[in-house]
Length: 416
Image 1 (cartoon, rainbow, N blue to C red):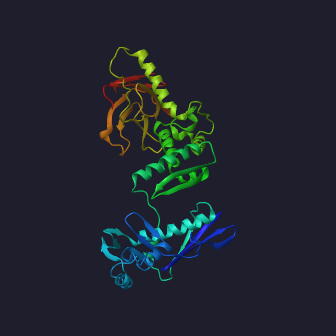
Image 2: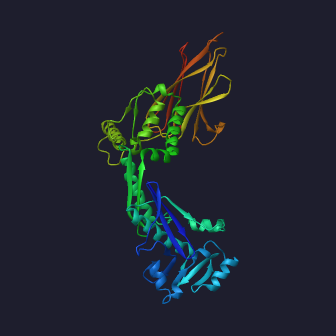
Image 3: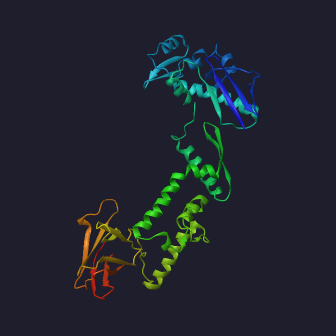
């Protein structure tokens, strides 16, 4: 394990490396253990260090020195005013920040400090023979928060560069796929930003920690669906993994924790499950519908949640989702509703909802009344409700008292 320490002084900079329990100052490409904190600008390049210092006399107006004295300061700061008066480079204020004006270009003090730091990091990494990302940078004792924050901004933010972000995302996607089968993966991008390469090794444990909030959302979605349809984990006997993310071992384990007695079916690659299901559905349609139809056959789905209103043990209203929105049609559901035995009639009410707002009377679209039921001193009426929703959205409802066999049937032409 190796790390770097950098001293970014007003006049000079120095770098040291820590390796094998020992810290040593490293020499730059000129063989010097300290590097002038000087940057010279030209139309085609930026020169840092000894070469910039040596050419300062010829390029006095385009050579920046002692940038540390102005870093993070504003024009009203006495130290900044003193620096501006002594600087051979033009310093102006624009958008509330002090900037160097060199050859009709504006350069921020942060950019200058970044160039010096990059030079020192390159010096240290050349001595080590490898890239190092763990760095400590020293600051003067009198540095305020503005100066510290300005120095901390020596970082490369690629979020405003769409090309760099796309290159990074592509590499990260490859690493994610590798972590499905390997314990660690390398994420490397050649010349990601400002000519710098990006190289990062990610362990599966680190990946799982980064994605933990996303995994939690997946688990909550499964639990919410079970709650909507009134199922428990024990009611499920098969779980088919589909979608690329289902390859992730951690996500598979979390799903297994929800359904501990169920085997996860993954004999078909998760990316291929959904199109195979679509092809099977197409085959079913081909067998049932006119094969000579020129238009594409559409698989209809319920547009809203269809719920049955009941009463819980405390007497409060309880809504059971029978058809969650998005249920492929046609579909059939059945539900047993329990009503107090001392009543001779039972009213069943059906509601529809988008699932985003509390249930209200405006959502009720149908009701069925079973009358002349035999009263019971003890026990409950068991009302079996069978609902069939056709492809056109019409709903056929049958309610039957399990004790007497009394039955009521209604059809709602357009339920959702």
